[in-house]
Image (cartoon, rainbow, N blue to C red; front, side):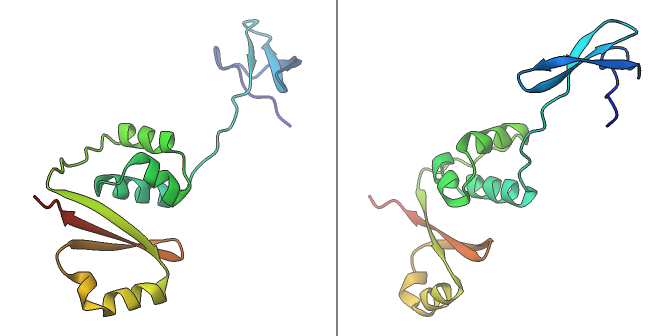
Length: 139
């Protein structure tokens, strides 16, 4: 395995210099700089990032997104900050959601009473579907 170049001077001549916190430590021969290799983080599929941001824009809270997608609410908050997403102000409407498989979704839509009095969006969520409805607050 090839040793990584020095991050300070970018010189290729480095030697191993022990192990710290279970990570290999290196020393640059040119500038005597000690460093360790960066730890690789967990990479989440862009599909989940997109879905999380869509759900956030639709008015679903961070914790609910965490329960739906199985992704940390802190990750969702970081994505919202990173992409500078602003959720629209919703004072008259509040979202409710249901997670349904294909057959349940068809049966739900067949019943005409389920489609009245609310706006609705249906989106794919892996092998299931999420149906988000907005109901107006009643005075």
